[in-house]
Figure 1 (cartoon, rainbow, N blue to C red):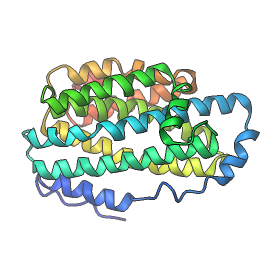
Figure 2: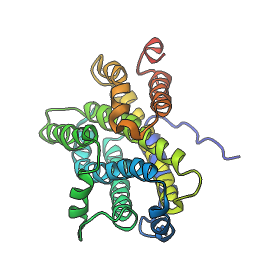
Figure 3: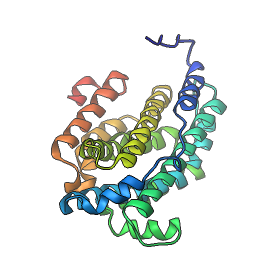
Figure 4: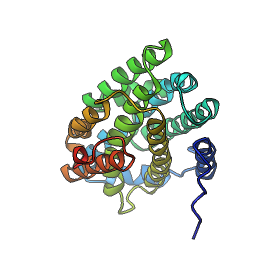
Amino acid sequence: MPQRPPFKGRSFWPSFFSKIVAHLQWEARAIDLVPDARAWPELEPARRERLTTLLAGFRVAEDAVAEHLEPFDGAAKRASLASAETLMAWVLFLQRRDEQRHAVFFDRIAAEVLGLPGETPDERREAARELAPPAVLELFEERLPALAADLAAGHAELSDGVSLYHMLLEGIVFDTARRALLDDIADGALPGVREGVRRTDLDERWHIGFGVRCLIESPPAPGVLEDLLAGAEESAAAWGDAVPAATRERVVRKVGRRLSAAGLIERRAAA
């Protein structure tokens, strides 16, 4: 059984996450989607509609995060962190590279499995926007770009960005949809999609863990995380009927436990 890495002080954490990244590397273009493309037309129509909503939403959202994460690097260098700021910025760079890989993978799904119109990624993204839930578009095409602009201008702190991106968008919105996707295709109907979503899920787990670490070292203003938790159910509902209520509830409970275990919120608020 692998041994837990020894704790060597807070400056140890960026190196620790870098090692996780090295272990999780995968190639978005190497996953075989041919069986998925063959199976897609044979799926029951209601199931195709549900999966289309989720996959189109990911097609738009992953592009958005890959595009708007760069200002987080500068915010990490400005932050008063116990870990070396330049190393923290390096880990954020690695995370941005992950998101670029995710964007490529979901664009492949849009083109090769869903058959969305468009000869270029930008054209397929526009086609996906017509199928994605409006609440998801608002979060990733309005709130995230606005926050990124504030970070770039120095009008927001790293903790503000991490609270929105790592905790809300990744920890609630993305996680809700991934759980729904993995549950829906657990029968192997779409093996390539399942493998890519599984690998994406592993990437996002370390992203969220890294976000928690950032907040421990540079906490947000009082009440920010409590407000996030209070709105967790609404955020989890961004995907509409494409995500079962039980899945939303499970993710919301997990977020509360995560923030409570890290000492970032009062335990009673996570109940």
